[in-house]
Length: 209
Image (cartoon, rainbow, N blue to C red; front, top):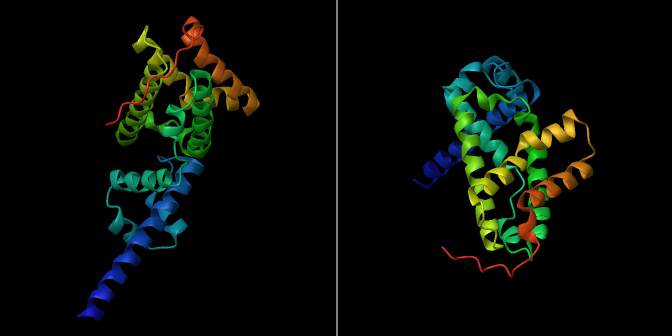
């Protein structure tokens, strides 16, 4: 019985590793030429498996995108939320936030630059969730540092400034040095808040869930 159980578990691990390798191959192709230009035949060749094997593990594009995004997200830099929230003042928090977002933008750029989230429902929903999470972090950050006036407007402005599109236009389309883009993003965030920073107040303690 133990031998049989071992064999079953070993087989499961092998299949999981194979599925992950297929997802990794698909992610590489999506980064190189986009989702729409990538076929299952391409993925099979890149992964070194048969076409039926690809379909066995990912029978639909939705399942394939789930696997690909999961693979890419697992390797993404973590957002240091606690460190950002605990920053001494809002300028310090803005610097940490911009630095963290830049690392994430650089990681996701090969896929995000195709702008396919505007055409594929699964990606549309995923990106919307990411934006909501970013807005929630911004809302908590601004509230903790006593910024309450025009709250909805400020959250919307900060979330937009921190978006991939804004960063990408500065760095790739306008070809600004990353250091310059970094500085501009911080300045934009703080400029939106404006006079509210003139009288800094002690950050309020973060509420425990």
